[in-house]
Every structure is written in C-alpha cells, then in structure tokens.
Image (cartoon, rainbow, N blue to C red; front, side, top):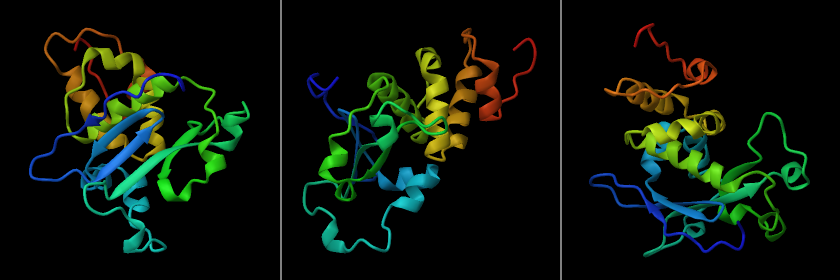
Length: 185
C-alpha cells in the first residue's frame, strides 16, 4: 500500500463547526472535528490538549489545529502483533519520531482504513450500510481501542432496524456491542 497514490481526504460534515483535526490512518486522511471525537471517544477525550503541550505546539492559520498520524506498534512492525491491540494507534504527530514513522504495518491497511471510516461515521451519526457488515468485527476492535463502543453500537442497532435489512451479523459482534436482537426480527 506504500506505493499507492494518496487518496483524496475524507471530509466529515458537522453543522456550524469548523474542521480542526486531521487524522492520518495509513495513507488515508480524515478531516474532522475534535469536538465530535472528544464526545464519542474516551481515547480522544483523554488525548487532546494534554498538559505538556503549549499553544505554540499547534499549527496556526489554514492548517488543522490537531494532526494525528498512524503509529505502528513496535512489536507489530517486527511481525509479532499484540493479541489485545490493533497493531497501530493514532498519535499526536509531533510525538512520533522519524524512526517510528518508518515502521511498516504487517496487517491489511485497507481493511483497517475501512473499519476506521465506519467507526468515524458512527461518531458522526451517519447511517451504516449493509456493506459495513464485512468490516464490523474489525470496527469493533477499533471501537474498543478508541473507547467508542456506544456510538458504534447505536449505528449497528440503527442498521439492523432498517426495513429490508437481511445481512447476517455474527452473534459475537452483537454481544460485544451489547445488542440484543429479538427472534423473528
């Protein structure tokens, strides 16, 4: 994926709010709103504006106030992924060293980008589609890591209740999301 052309940024819409955050998930850039991320993800709520950063640490003008990039876990880069972790995280750009930026992810970057997109869209209360189901297990792992299960759960519940929805969702996914589906639904 390293040689792939850089795709256009995915821009998340939110009324009356200016975009102030760029999240770089592998080669895909997401432009979004820190207020939405903080509201729906405990990971981002804890991570934005830590005490050790000063005003001069943030870009000014047209750039995003916050820029977070993919940080590949050292064990993942060595081909030994953690069983409990996703093998990567999003970290404040200025906290990632050049050596860390060069680490290669051994997993499927595209699947992770799609699953993150699903999670991000659930934070924005955008409806999910049946095509999301193929990436739901990975989206749940990301939601667990980014501490954002409730918003993904609401999005999946909404998808299930859509008229004509006929895709089978694995029971393990429903359990992790805390969704109970009544028989005959």
